[in-house]
Length: 474
Image (cartoon, rainbow, N blue to C red; front, side, top):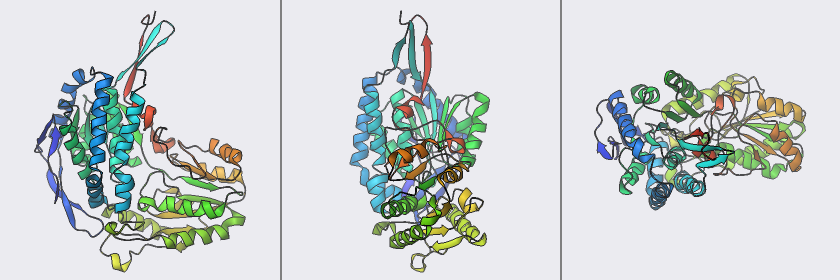
């Protein structure tokens, strides 16, 4: 039984001051995988106080010393990769191959990139006779989701440490166990007390206190747009910096000259990866009307090749991560069917042999129009909407006709033409012809997809203030 019932505050493992203890449910079979404490406002106050007390001394620690801590943390994450992966799978159901090959390794990947940036980053530089300084912003509240738990934790914790900030991490109460392992690592490497603090809990119980506290200088949050709005409201009275990485409804434009035999299978697999539970998933597939029949053929063929099964069996798709999300995914599939969208593959029913687990088959709808719910709402499940367009201008208009703006995808043999389309997409990221994410490049979005950027140097600078020292470079 995994245990997330103690908090790591001021360099010590402590019992919560309030709140309750609840079970963490394994979505693959609905068994109890462990327990987590849901902290209270009192726990938030204690953690923030520890971070505030540690800030003055930690902010003055040399860059070389911060790099040394980061390297030791990264090495420990690598050494405990399989343990972290198992903890992630037990909480949110990612297939073991995905957990061990991508979910857990994303932690040291982000730490490694921050180390590379920090080794040559200029915290001071001259602008004429003025000295420009970049200084740590202060105490940070870090709130992370359940879908890529270690990835999002590392993308915040690593740059916060690198910048000289102190922090309180509140991971999702639905996937709390990998954060406990990270706290153990922080203790083992001897990170000064109060620099990193871990509390567990939900939004009403502890999240609101952490995002409104007067002694918190910055909130970095990854999760739903609805929660991002609430956090912004909480932070506004004290004028905190708020960095938000929120939802998406990313369009995937197949240009007329795209190589369909490559583009469509990879697009379908990209949408379905992690059971569709990625904010940047290519969930709207925009295709030329004349190519629609062949696209459907390839898409359905790919979907039917994807296996759905228990995480221990290394299926392509594991379960949906929790009951609330499962109900939402199933409801949106049923709504799409009720709205007359053409169901080409999958559907709302869990495979009988996988009950009572929270499994959804790879689901594809065809001839989806922009007004349908499945084209406008973020499903966060293995659901693809295929939409047709008559010319590239219409494709761009459809792609941009969304409240979100996180990512986009363009496939085309003429790279110059594909880049021209990418330039007109109102999104923070665009993948050309299946190009992978780059951990050195900024990750984030436009519009309702968020504020600010994570990863690499841009992620580091989210945690830094800028000071002008006039005459300081004379």
